[in-house]
Structure formats: structure tokens, C-alpha cells
Image (cartoon, rainbow, N blue to C red):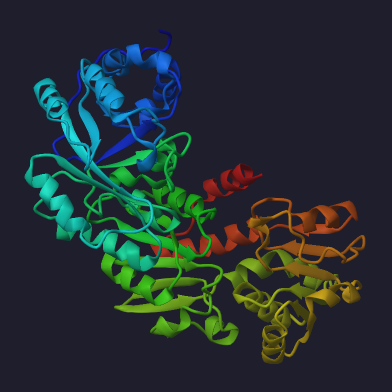
Length: 502
């Protein structure tokens, strides 16, 4: 076969946390190519037999020898999230034949008991991973069931659906609850489970799974795990930072912060935390000893009651996008204000921008409106929720109107779009589709992904000056980096990040 790696006998790692690549190819050759591409980022791999074409089955036993790293043998049933549709008798025969190869581990479900297969695995030196899958919730007796598996000398594995921050707290209890269990695998599925995949050491998991094509909810690439998050380098001294929101997994902020931390050799990690309940997140933050976090939609106002100290900007704006731990208190600041206004200063000073239409009345809009009003601009706020628009307008001495009436304000100098419409999961949506842009107007889109939203595309066609959300994100992100680390953001990275997004 082409692309074959040099033969290396499998090594059992004795509890050292690992990065495991789930191979998703339909042929052995496809899997070897995936392995070659990802070899710098991984410690072992999982051969998913259930994803292979049947004609590839005869080559399974030889795979560990050509792979060159320890391999987990897995053949997952449909009921457990896999693709194997044959009978249990046929699956048993397939696994017994596969064990002629030198596999380091074999993954079997908790209800799959075949003494002949287990004896053969033991004889061949393959350790048994005993898996429990629940795609709906975290079973109430999960820790007890895992302890019973470990008592039999097998490696217990829980792959469970995490539906809330409260569930995530339960998952992070695994390390303490199962402290007597040496080797265990803990996998949190779904968006809310994502932090447990990155902080797999903090849940006490032997390994974390990655793949080129996600075969489970929440999986990321091995390269992202190794180079962006550096999850394998997290230790007891690593400071944890993050961004909270809902949705938030699309955030560009982990790239900004993690690359900055790595550049200055700061032992820290920054990751997204999907949050449904702010109070629960603050409990999790205490549990994980989180040092600081960014705040995005829809929590910029909801975090305020939990802060022990706030800056003048937060008090005025009534919105917070940055929280840091200071003297055992949570301190809230707002870098949106400065990140937003910086690209406009030249236009305001030249009096090109004296009036503005702000679309939206949420947390981001609050910083935008206050910044514009503090710099002498006349502002009109349009929003679907009229009560929120009126409240923000009254606080800032601005005007307000319904979103449907946005076209009436076509003569303003500046249009600022602050809503989530246009980004995931609202791609392709234009919040003011009937608005007629004029040549020379300044159009500022706070969404940074995609780079050109439907609104910006229309403005570009009419010859407007475009300002992009990525510029604001980088500016406010640099200020957050200083709050988090105490250091200035590395200048060399600023250009690279801008080019990467472009």
C-alpha cells in the first residue's frame, strides 16, 4: 500500500492523557492517508471498522503494524452511533478475526459480553475499553457504573449528551468522583459538552477524540486540538479563559487569544463555553478556577448581577463584555466601546459622520450607541422589540423606531448593524433588506464571520465605505488580552490574524 508508515509496536501509555484520531475512511488506504496527514498531532488512533467497506475487512488485522502507533479497534452499532448493520454474530466474528492483528485496545459496549472475544483480547495484549453511550442525557448512576467496570480490570468509557451548563458541571465532577479509577475515558457530546473535549485532563479522561470529519457531536480536528488549543499541554498551573455566549462555538476569539498566549509563552488556554444559564456558568467558573472570560450575545447584561466590581464604561453602558478575577472578585469591563469607536474616529473628526442608524438594541448595541453619543453623533435606534429600543434611546438621549421603518432613515451618515442576523445560524439574512444605501455612506457590520454579510454586499454594490466586524473584534480582543495576561498583544500576530480571516 502507498503511504504506509514505518512499523512501531504499540505501547500502552499507563494513564498519560492522549489525543486520539478517529479514522473515518471507507478504505484502509483512506485511513492511512488521514493518519499520515495528522501524525504530528496525535498519539494513537481508532480504526472504525463500521465505517469501512466490507471488501476492506481482510486487511484489518494488518492495520496496526502499518499504522505505526497504538490503535483502538472499534466496530460501532447503529444504536451506539455507529454504522454497522450486520448481526451480532457477524460482528463478533469480524472482531475475532480483526484481533489477529496487534491492536492496543478494543472498544466494546457495556451490553456486549462475549467471553471468547474478551479472552482473545487479553491473550493478544489488547486492553478492553467498555463503552456506555447515551445520546439523550447523563445517566444519574453513571459514576457507579463506571466504577463497576473499572473493578473488572477494564477501562470505563462514558460518551454522554451534555444539554446544559449544569450537565457540564456534572461531567467535570468525574475526576473527583472516580479518583480511585486510574484509566477512564470521559466524553461530553453536543455543544455544551465541547469544553470537556478540550479540557479532557480536567475531567480525568485518558484521551480525547478528534477527527477530520466529525463522527460525534463536538469533535474537532487533531490539528486544532494540538496547535490551537494545545489541550495536551494543560497542567495544574494552566490558567483557563474563555468566551461565553449562545451560540459561541463559531467564535474567532480562541484564535486571537490562544495564539497570543503561545507567542508570549503564557501558560493559559482560551476556549468557547456555550452557556444557557449565567448563574450555572459562574458555579462552573469557580469549580474550574477560570481566571477570566469574554462575554457575547446574549449575556452581556445578564452577567452584571454577578460582578463584584465594574468599570465606569460598564456602569454607563449597562453592558459587559470582559470579566476577570481580581482579589477574589469578578471585575467587569467593556472593550467593545473602544474597539468599536477606534476605526470611526477619523470619520467623526472630519465630520463625515454626524448621524447614525443603529440596527439592534442588545448588549453590543449599548456600547455602540454610548460610544457614538459620547462623540457627538445623533443616533436613531431601530429594533424589532420596541420596548428595548425605547429604553436604550431614553438612556442615551437618542431616537428610536421599529425595525420595519429603517428605510425612512436613508439619509444618515453611518449605518451600524449589531444583531446576529447574517451569521450562523442566520446566514443569508439581511436585517434591513429594504434599506437603500447611498454612495459615500459608512456601513459598519459588527458580524465578523462571514466577512461579507448580505447587508455588506448590498452596501458594497452602492459604493459605501465598509467597516468590518473583524477590525472591531481584533481591537477589543487585544484589550481583553491585556486584561487577561497583563501583557500587550504581540504585534507580529495582528497582521497574520487579519490575513487569516480575509
